[in-house]
Length: 394
Picture (tube, rainbow, N blue to C red):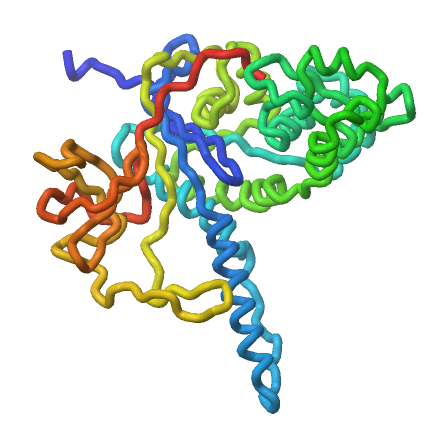
């Protein structure tokens, strides 16, 4: 009977990241296993926001330099508690907005967040940790996860992907090398054995371009790690405002769960494995909704070159024949070289000849009469991704 029916718990699980975040809507069965119902990959635009702020700052500085007698403004602007730069606040706001959408669509009973933390001091020098941490179940998972993100999950020597990767010392420990993260790289088994105890300069003496790239990579700053660290508690506090139970799990625990259950590395699958779980299940053919943060356009209607001189102008009216840039449309072209059906975000022109951004690429020169509006621009672009291959979990 419907009156006697009972809903299984439904959770929204989040894997927050600096550039991409993963979301998984799961149901929890009687055994405590998590069954995936829906996956989302959210692509942030923090880098573009940072670049826009940098450009504005440079422009203001240039304008101030043209004045001779104006006194500088007194620096009395205090920031409220919990303030974040716009590029970081964007990550918190978009993640919270999508949790709100999912809570409206599903009977969510709780939220699980991977409380990611890259301890910069611990990553740089693992020896400062206690013996219990170093020899525990999660030993080296934090450092390894950082290296996987830093080097793109591939061998730095040969570029091999989807193979077991080892942590290799640039300066071998036999020659006095340390365990600092600036001395660690990822290598496949073959390259690791070929390099043996050789210094990297000797091993790559005939491949100077690879040696130069590795030396530049190992000096890469901890920018993404800092962004994750700065936003993790702000996101946690924002999630508590929904009034639902919020549980957390470390990034090392997520990595441990992925290895235990044999799950590939993807952001949405990281979300599935976040927190304490007894088992995970997901259909191999399930599609993933990729949501790309695009923004709602720009106030600036003049395009300039790198020297600041105008090179073009946008239309005064953002909407042309009922369409605006960023709207989701479906275009059906009955004949001609571009005959076919196209679905995606539209870029409008005053002439009525539009461009449509599809997963296969940009389709140019589609007449507005062939387009049908599906949804107005909401600041996001949508696409369906193919499911992740079931490969070796590195």
